[in-house]
Length: 461
Image (cartoon, rainbow, N blue to C red; front, side, top):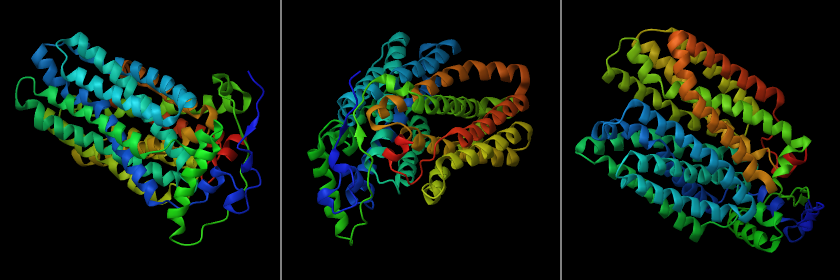
């Protein structure tokens, strides 16, 4: 590995006027501009479409199973194997974004999953459909990972948290939207489910918009010696922000070091973060899928009619929309790891209660609280994960954590079924609830502080 060397040297001692300050320090001190709000809408729409593509099979599976005569095992195979594609997409997309840039990976991964969505729509048999869903997982997770990194790197330190809550709101809208679209189209006739898959191809419009309107991230450009280009982007933002009044002073920024090796993740200062975040995020993913994917089955097992169980599950799902709305007010006021401790604790207690209660009202209340807290934890994690790695390996670092989380998703499908079969709903949700309590405490004890701190200071600690 080559000897590290500082780049973007004009960043040092940048407390002076913008002409002598580095582009990263100048970016971090800015208020949110209308340009960045536009970027956020584009990225949010991209995340919504990616989420749609990611979960749509779950809503179309009954219609496809009926038309093709699929077994439960075949449906389960597609559901689990998609996580394999997501694992590949998370790590590969993250690594590529560190090497060639955030923008090109976001563009081409969006094109890729759009094409594979059309492949799903045109699938002549189960085998082609299964392959297309795995490939969709690759593209979707590559794009999602880059979106997370992009927001971390291009939005000021004092508003990163709120920016993520807005983006996550778009993603959470995908669940009820997908359910309603599938319900409206899939039952309308044989093969109608294909049109729902085809809707996922609108990701190509996100790709075109990104290609035309979104720049490469300032931090990636500085890290790769493109300080002049980065400065041009920041100057444009300063011009817009300056129309609203004087700009805050620029704080000194740490020099950036160019080290792009994957091995950087395993240096002492980052290895601990990687282990802590990968472990705790995997616990969250395991518990989220253990709850969300099993609510209708659990309720039917309690003696409810399937229609009533689906209605309750739909009501509970709206808890996801409440989480980012609430977090918007506090996301940049409390530490990310404190938010994870609180949301993990609330979710854990609510899940334990959900497994123990009976009756429609208590089921809905405990389910809504659990869903809201789980969505809050997911939002905080997606904000937190890219913050803790340095720019030169932020993509692959965040991708590795996300990829390991997908392995937990694969394991959840099999393990939760076994736990439910042997322990019943109370025992299952007792274990999941305790897991969330441990998750929150672990992040609070071992995770770094990140809220309202520059990414460079977080990396240097």
